[in-house]
Image (cartoon, rainbow, N blue to C red):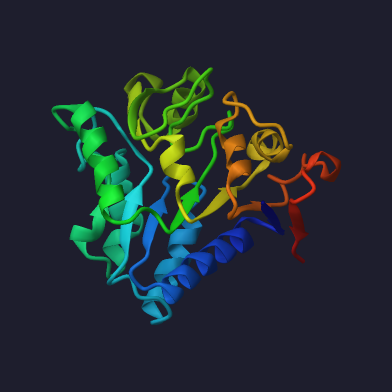
Length: 256
């Protein structure tokens, strides 16, 4: 595990964008696993800038999103489908047929999960997976629990996650209670993973993620088992990390 601490959110986002661009430069037909939420927004903005400056080409890239709310149509302004098109896809040259997002309005969610999992396998898996993290340590919508899903499944959202996401809705009651999410095994099969976190509200979750202890009560802690994981943080998100608690093979880098 590599932990890289940048001075602030913008510096962290620039580093993340450079990592994505480097992946595409090395493999033009890369399969990218993408995340939504507030944290990756500036990364997407910087990738759009790089595209406009002809520094990165998305024409052969395929994308696979981590999750989607159950019950929201693609055109709903709070769906992750809408988020991705509005904040990223409409502003780069990725082909529509190369975009994969779970269908939140599917008639049969179990079939949708199986089909989504098969679509990832069909395209040889994910080369680079971008992740955010919830304040309770969830990644995708894999919530803290006694056991975790292996593959893409319908999951129940915790009250904590519903409350956190209610800021995007008119009320807490409007937040969907279920979502389709990639499972932990699917995420961990990615060749490379970059976990992004920013702000003091993520510091506790990051501490629990990198502390050397693995628990399904902190789903992100399972990332410690991956051979190519980079945790990219701003100083606030990294504020509770204790070097003494890190495993011996963990590389801790603080950037000026």
